[in-house]
Length: 452
Image 1 (spheres, rainbow, N blue to C red):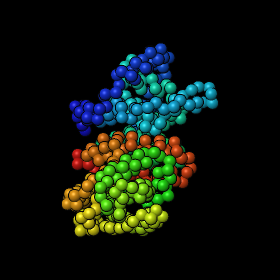
Image 2 (spheres, rainbow, N blue to C red; image 1 turned 60 degrees about the horizontal axis):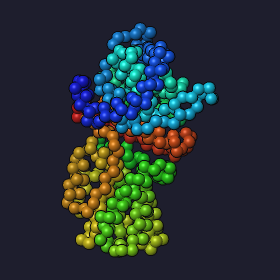
Image 3 (cartoon, rainbow, N blue to C red; image 1 turned 90 degrees about the vertical axis):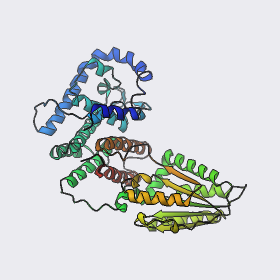
Image 4 (cartoon, rainbow, N blue to C red; image 1 turned 135 degrees about the vertical axis):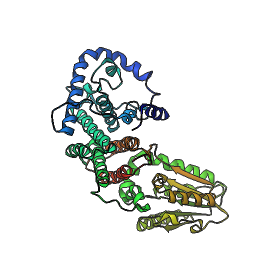
């Protein structure tokens, strides 16, 4: 367990305490003061009932144990401004009778963490809690949101027990999660469904019920590459969600600027996925009038699905031919990327060399020999530019609890995004969420250097 000083330092490093004081407090202080008396009794009742439910789940009785939990690392949930950048739209969830603020999955997880912290420190109700930005939030929740907060809280309790290696107790919490969560429900229910699966798999591995496989690079990359195999679903995601457009177009612009004076361009892609971004690059290069490009070559390194990459290459070649643009596509198929050398690449002296690694290097951290090999080869190739895109989340923390919390927020945001742009029964959405589940399992099953 980390002590309070470690947690304070951890939170400060992430800037968790920088956003509170001015705007948030000034906007809500007057309203909360007026509602203080009205909400106090209700909030106390909600917290007491929530604590009793979790105690009953763990002990199988109605006896209230004190102290309930001691989970100092989850304090980082209390103040996390990086997840508090906007208010959700208010919508009527009670047929016009009352207006409730419908919360996102990330907000639900944060509220669950706040309630969980209150339980662990045995603080039920006081003036400071009610004046806290989350203090009276429980009394304003819709019935659905309140159920989701309770579900997320049970998931956090299960994660704590896994962290403490109390696996029998963790299984009790996970059983309840499995009853309430659903892969076809709302974003919180979907996220909890996959996180509960991942925690259950970790327990089985730790207790010997699921024999660990020898860790290979293909296993580690599956959390990312499995998604690449669902080509049609990722094309649908690319069309609906703007984030990929921003990442791709920013990279394309940087590439074009770096090879502005080069007659030939050679791009090496470590993880091509759908390849839709390179159609935009080809079109932009074909339209360049000053210093026109004589030839563009894309070399792809693939370890999992060669057939899919072959089809991607054919599509790009066909598109380039339609523009009468000189283009070639090459695949380097390496099931073991530790065998990668600079000799695999046919680099010409007059080529402008660009390396592209989008959402790939994070999968290499757990296989340091492959990462070291890749970095050594890249240094020897001496590219004009290397484009790296990664998520802003600490998914490789050496401590399980920190890795779990960042992963929970990261994937909750992804489930939120899909809720906004796809129907709940959309097959593309379900395919994408299965790939997210693989990513969640990959992060949670992995042991960090600070874990026992």
